[in-house]
Image (cartoon, rainbow, N blue to C red; front, side, top):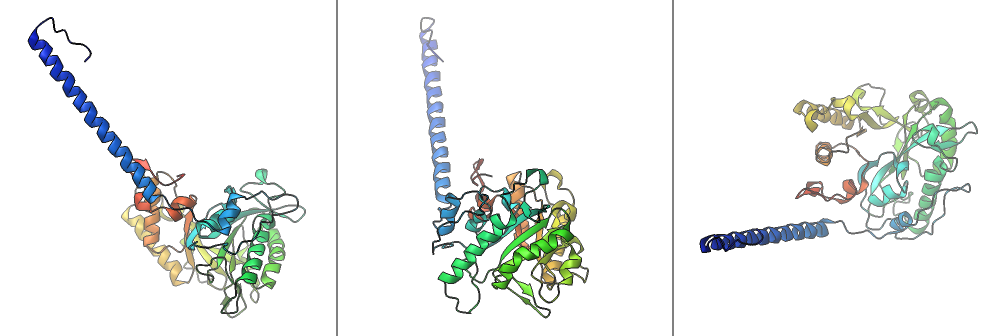
Length: 358
């Protein structure tokens, strides 16, 4: 209330003064509450914001350059390559879409990455989600195989292995095998020999997990084929198999899928459990998830659900909780920061989304 018609009566003037004073007190209280609220959220964000990890990997992420016609950019090697990075069972879905393919996922601690490949007429494997978006410089070798070769070469030259075997990527657990999931996009039977040829140098260096006809020997890098990967050719190479299969999780009971020929057991979430009505998981859908995860684990395979919803955040986090609480083998993620560095319980606080770029 602005102004007060005191000329009308002394009583009216007094009422105006009281009303104005009351409004000022209410406004003052509201303003104070807002300041407390904002200060609380700010302090919470500061407290919960994950500290920046300083490592050789992070330095590469910060200074990464796209491959050129000469191949992958060569970065200076630092012995603190993966210092303070805890490996986590998460899969960097469509990893090549990231600002920094491969390195960004490794810097977050994800042990699994994914590359979609297309075979060209000149026998090269281009990496892209669709043929129309392929670029001659972005190949399986330039984005993944050459950088991995450089990492394993330097890691095993600079770190002595007590067990006299090739060392993995992570200092925190050098026995962890990194997974490279390769999605065959066009003719799988034609891609197969080209892929084997490009992988052979890594196999000869002892870096690849392989099946020798009797047992699976784990290496610091495991190659898994999905999409149009020909299962018949995977099984055919039965004495020096170094590409494994991504078996169908919703049909995993078939005896042909074993740890000798398969590594992942994957399925699209919606195909596995149907639609999520009202953004909620029904009890029967959770039961299906539990049954499938157990079925894969009983066969020694790593369960994985893809095409999981990323929005709303509350649904995404609930799915992550449900999957991890039921021991899913690998969590398929798009948002690396939220998946690996935030506490999912605190993603939404006071109506603020605290989970980075989600």
